[in-house]
Length: 470
Image (cartoon, rainbow, N blue to C red; front, side):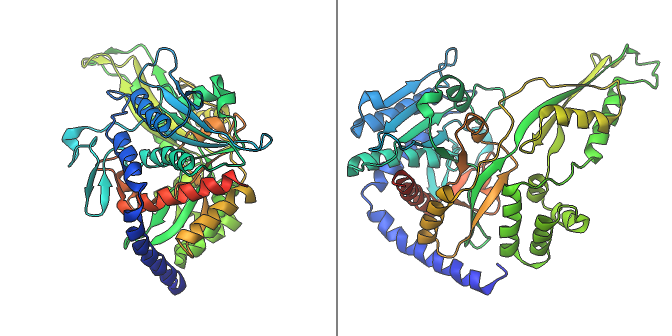
């Protein structure tokens, strides 16, 4: 890190982590938490071959074994989706006027093929200071922590002012799958009603030496929307080619999209991120971040930030070609050619506005643009109030003194996209710190640091307790 003061603070935080490692090993509840975590990781919950319902049932058994009555632990299985069920659980608060807090997590995971991985993706393996396995980070760590919270609260006889709810869902990781959070928002809105929800979205950052850099808080995210480009013409025999070719015309359209950059668009979340992270990073890049936060039309500063793919995506709507198909025979001119364009749209921008912009960029009426499927409402940011931030800051500074809290706009999308429009402001904060390469999330050999898992569990336990007593 560029600042000596921050380096010293990070080193102090690392020393505290080492001190906590000994106490974590003595924690009698840690073994129980690890059994919960292991059971989740080792339950295959991929869409192709897994079973979210089974994972939810196993978590329900842990809660009833801890003393929760059946009336407070309820499975839900949407009709026609027997393996995509989930769980709702409740710890009742003492103040009937105080709105609930919702702990939200999806238990489904990205596909993982054993032949591609160095280790079995559905076995929790501890090695060289890491836990390996699909979902170890995204997001069975937080799901296990939420279940563990309810067990601990029950064990302690904790009587919160606010009701604490848990929702474990399926379908977040696969576009086109039934999404459990969306289903709850549409069919069981009362069951998940809350003042706000906490879920995934942003983790903590570690540098290359494993030092804590910053803890992210998701305040806004983009929405994912696919658009279909299609060109149709009469075709003909390939031995007599003509200039008019459906594939060529489609490729011209894709090339225009490839060359187009949406303008920089700042909202509270990404502006706050640029200011805070710019101060942390320092140097030329840090100065550019602060300049863009102040003036998004600063072309030189924007060009510098655009060299980083994460910053480039955070600053604007993006659209990219992800799938192509065309032709019907190897010896015939194509009669039809299609492309899928996946756009990640900034909060507050409509799907129709992006469709119109694509039409203007392509500038070819023979290229039809359609919206094949709408998944969820438009993205909406969540307000970063003192009620939300103060408890995060309090607990984070107890565990990681001097590590800054950085609001963020997530270029991807979480289940917040379904709860925010339903009137439940949803924030992403985990307390799990990840390596600079992201820890293999959505890729091969996904991992999380052992100490990061333990510390994140402690963070989420203390955070929910603070929220519950506000």
